[in-house]
Image (cartoon, rainbow, N blue to C red; front, side):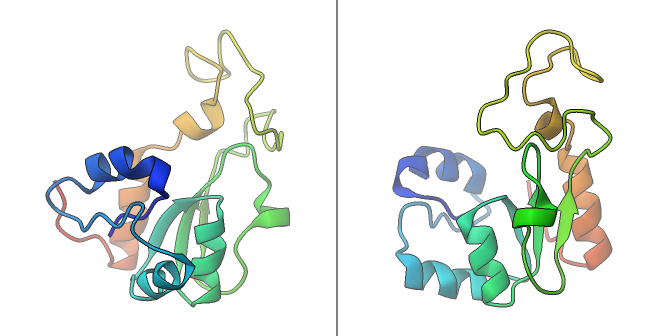
Length: 136
Protein backbone atom coordinates (compact mmCIF):
# COMPACT_ATOMS: atom_id res chain seq x y z
CA UNK A 1 0.00 0.00 0.00
CA UNK A 2 1.07 3.56 -0.64
CA UNK A 3 -0.29 6.29 1.63
CA UNK A 4 -0.27 10.05 1.18
CA UNK A 5 -2.37 13.14 1.53
CA UNK A 6 -4.78 14.54 -1.08
CA UNK A 7 -2.08 16.89 -2.42
CA UNK A 8 0.22 13.87 -3.01
CA UNK A 9 -2.16 11.77 -5.16
CA UNK A 10 -0.13 12.22 -8.33
CA UNK A 11 3.04 11.13 -6.53
CA UNK A 12 1.40 8.18 -4.74
CA UNK A 13 0.05 6.92 -8.08
CA UNK A 14 3.56 6.92 -9.53
CA UNK A 15 5.03 5.19 -6.47
CA UNK A 16 2.27 2.57 -6.36
CA UNK A 17 2.51 1.87 -10.08
CA UNK A 18 0.86 -1.40 -11.06
CA UNK A 19 2.05 -3.41 -8.08
CA UNK A 20 0.69 -1.63 -4.96
CA UNK A 21 -2.65 -0.28 -3.80
CA UNK A 22 -2.67 3.51 -3.98
CA UNK A 23 -4.43 4.92 -0.90
CA UNK A 24 -3.09 8.44 -1.50
CA UNK A 25 -5.71 11.01 -0.57
CA UNK A 26 -8.30 8.32 0.12
CA UNK A 27 -8.06 7.91 3.88
CA UNK A 28 -9.20 9.83 6.91
CA UNK A 29 -7.32 9.38 10.19
CA UNK A 30 -9.25 6.24 11.16
CA UNK A 31 -8.74 4.54 7.79
CA UNK A 32 -5.08 5.53 7.78
CA UNK A 33 -4.63 3.96 11.23
CA UNK A 34 -6.39 0.79 10.06
CA UNK A 35 -4.32 0.65 6.88
CA UNK A 36 -1.08 1.13 8.79
CA UNK A 37 -2.08 -1.54 11.31
CA UNK A 38 -2.51 -3.99 8.41
CA UNK A 39 1.05 -3.42 7.16
CA UNK A 40 3.97 -5.69 8.02
CA UNK A 41 6.25 -2.65 8.01
CA UNK A 42 6.01 1.02 7.02
CA UNK A 43 8.79 2.72 5.05
CA UNK A 44 8.38 6.41 5.80
CA UNK A 45 9.95 9.74 6.49
CA UNK A 46 9.79 11.55 9.84
CA UNK A 47 6.05 12.22 9.77
CA UNK A 48 2.72 11.94 11.51
CA UNK A 49 1.97 8.62 9.80
CA UNK A 50 5.28 7.29 11.17
CA UNK A 51 4.06 8.02 14.70
CA UNK A 52 0.61 6.64 13.93
CA UNK A 53 2.16 3.40 12.64
CA UNK A 54 4.19 3.14 15.84
CA UNK A 55 1.04 3.75 17.90
CA UNK A 56 -0.82 0.90 16.18
CA UNK A 57 2.17 -1.45 16.57
CA UNK A 58 3.48 -1.45 12.99
CA UNK A 59 7.28 -1.52 12.74
CA UNK A 60 8.79 1.33 10.75
CA UNK A 61 11.85 1.97 8.66
CA UNK A 62 12.18 5.73 8.74
CA UNK A 63 14.42 7.87 6.55
CA UNK A 64 15.98 10.80 8.36
CA UNK A 65 17.81 13.83 7.09
CA UNK A 66 17.69 17.02 9.09
CA UNK A 67 15.57 15.75 11.97
CA UNK A 68 16.80 14.31 15.24
CA UNK A 69 15.33 10.85 15.87
CA UNK A 70 16.58 11.03 19.46
CA UNK A 71 14.01 13.77 19.98
CA UNK A 72 11.18 12.96 17.55
CA UNK A 73 11.76 9.34 16.54
CA UNK A 74 9.11 6.63 16.73
CA UNK A 75 8.38 5.15 20.14
CA UNK A 76 8.25 1.45 20.87
CA UNK A 77 9.91 -1.68 19.52
CA UNK A 78 10.72 -2.71 15.98
CA UNK A 79 11.69 0.62 14.45
CA UNK A 80 14.80 1.15 12.37
CA UNK A 81 16.21 4.55 11.50
CA UNK A 82 18.16 5.11 8.29
CA UNK A 83 20.29 8.24 8.29
CA UNK A 84 23.78 9.59 7.74
CA UNK A 85 24.84 11.02 11.12
CA UNK A 86 28.47 11.14 9.95
CA UNK A 87 27.71 14.33 8.03
CA UNK A 88 28.75 17.33 10.15
CA UNK A 89 25.47 19.13 9.43
CA UNK A 90 23.25 16.29 10.76
CA UNK A 91 20.97 16.88 12.54
CA UNK A 92 20.42 20.50 11.62
CA UNK A 93 16.65 20.22 12.36
CA UNK A 94 15.81 22.77 9.66
CA UNK A 95 12.76 22.42 7.42
CA UNK A 96 14.63 23.87 4.45
CA UNK A 97 18.20 22.84 3.67
CA UNK A 98 20.45 25.93 3.67
CA UNK A 99 23.39 24.13 2.05
CA UNK A 100 24.44 24.92 -1.51
CA UNK A 101 27.43 24.04 -3.63
CA UNK A 102 29.60 20.95 -3.24
CA UNK A 103 28.49 18.46 -0.66
CA UNK A 104 30.61 16.50 1.78
CA UNK A 105 30.12 13.35 -0.33
CA UNK A 106 27.91 14.26 -3.28
CA UNK A 107 28.36 16.89 -5.97
CA UNK A 108 25.39 18.89 -4.63
CA UNK A 109 25.11 19.76 -0.93
CA UNK A 110 21.37 20.49 -0.79
CA UNK A 111 19.54 17.67 1.07
CA UNK A 112 22.66 15.53 0.86
CA UNK A 113 21.68 13.88 4.15
CA UNK A 114 18.55 12.40 2.51
CA UNK A 115 19.93 11.83 -0.97
CA UNK A 116 22.66 9.59 0.46
CA UNK A 117 20.01 7.09 1.56
CA UNK A 118 19.64 4.69 -1.35
CA UNK A 119 16.79 2.40 -2.37
CA UNK A 120 19.24 -0.49 -1.93
CA UNK A 121 19.67 0.50 1.74
CA UNK A 122 15.93 0.20 2.32
CA UNK A 123 15.69 -3.03 0.33
CA UNK A 124 18.53 -4.56 2.37
CA UNK A 125 16.71 -3.82 5.64
CA UNK A 126 13.42 -5.18 4.26
CA UNK A 127 15.17 -8.30 3.00
CA UNK A 128 16.91 -8.84 6.33
CA UNK A 129 13.53 -8.57 8.08
CA UNK A 130 11.92 -10.94 5.60
CA UNK A 131 9.41 -8.29 4.51
CA UNK A 132 10.68 -7.60 0.99
CA UNK A 133 8.09 -8.85 -1.47
CA UNK A 134 7.93 -8.83 -5.24
CA UNK A 135 8.19 -5.34 -6.66
CA UNK A 136 9.01 -3.86 -10.05
